Image (cartoon, rainbow, N blue to C red; front, side, top):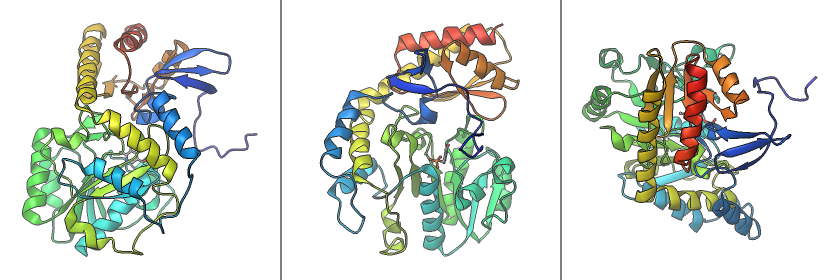
Length: 377
Ligand code: PLP
């Protein structure tokens, strides 16, 4: 019997080594990793610039409490908010923690409790984030949940308008629902949310834990929409594989998080911050972002051409793509794995394609060849 709890259905592959987009199991079999540790490895596996950053920092200082000032955290926050309307950052260790901070900040700032989120959303597994999540299967058996979250159908303006009232503190959404099926917010819905928030003085929390940090070809996915967050949450790609999360907010909210209101022991740890700074220095470069968009276009056009069946729809933004397969995808993912391509699902019927942002065109071609073989037969 395993010494671990059974809360993951683990695939029978033991990965021991990785470089760029490629990973290797214990018997030396090579795989193309189009999961990126679920949207985490923005610069690929064991990128030498990140290895160097970790090595260098590990010889200086591993941990220091947030009781002391941190010019490194200051610089990382400044890089994240540069050229945006956001002004301040708070660092934590994961996406769920970033969302907990966002929920606390929104409630305290507005002095109200209701937060509207969306069906099929995913915001994390801690109590606040799980309660915000619009998927019953995530919540089952854990009640009572945190109160005052209202879940509304995604991309449905009328449904959203029908639940608005004076008690609403914030609307919280993902620009592309990652876990929930790779569903992008429509232009019309984005505009409606922006208008409602502005007219009714409601905060907008955007969860970019999966879509942020260049994953969609812009620094943040919201930049491609009419949405303008008061609070933005990040994690996954920020540390390029080292755990770190962040919550960013506007100047208006600065006083709400006064000393003692919120905190974490490990958040903004020197090792995490050192790696994240190097990640941002690379992925926020205009030329890098442009390449992500080019690769995305290349990937989408080829997929649409090569996939014979009309039952498959390609969707998503940047290098967060989904293949809506109109069937249960778990057996297809297993077949791809046997052919040397690692994939992850998004709900029951969608295959998610999340290569490292450094993926090469040749690797995209190789992945497409495997996908075509599996999906067209
Ligand atoms: N928010 C979104 C949009 C996510 O995709 C995830 C994880 O998949 C989370 C929050 C939770 O992040 P973490 O697993 O780091 O707590």
